Length: 115
Length: 115
Image (cartoon, rainbow over all chains, first blue to last red; front, side, top):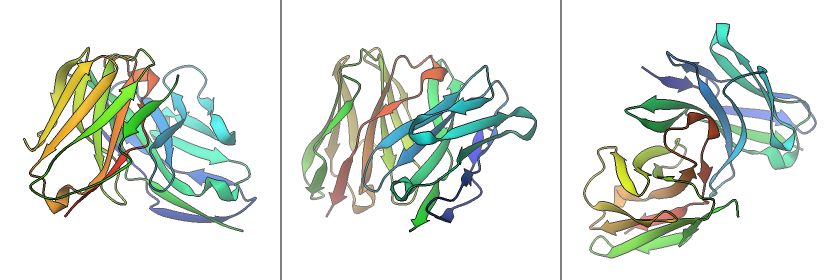
């Protein structure tokens, strides 16, 4: 079955430190992968996406993610975290089923940033 | 215009009330979605509209009734809700439900409380 796993429920980093959020997927075909960020009480904002080409994808707000097919992973990284990055991060895979596109989300990782 | 607009932002309703949530996009997207998100959980798909026709209903109770009057508007009519229906309701759109690579654009959501 198609699924997305985010192993870390909660991560705390210091401002200025590097960040890596993990995402593993299970999908039989070529995965279309996304990272979204959600601030408290807000909707989801697309950070970046991957569906072909270069396996290192650049996104907004200084984020990047690397697709590794051999590890079924799509980890999100940022070299230097800012306090404003504190939010919930969701990894998602687009599943095409019955002629329609569905986004399947991981459980999310809550990021806290210490000053 | 690259936004999905949802109204109202907050809604409190009694279990006997009838209310509606509204969603609007002017990006020319032909697929629109309703998601439900409980606290500290990922969004869960409720309905998919493709070209103004209901394509997917993820076994949602009949007290939730979606409507797509035109390609830019999506409504969710609420009637006889239960307290456990309290959640953040997110609307999203995408260029087409058959295109997995574009991702969704989400609105900021309606925070619904059922009393």
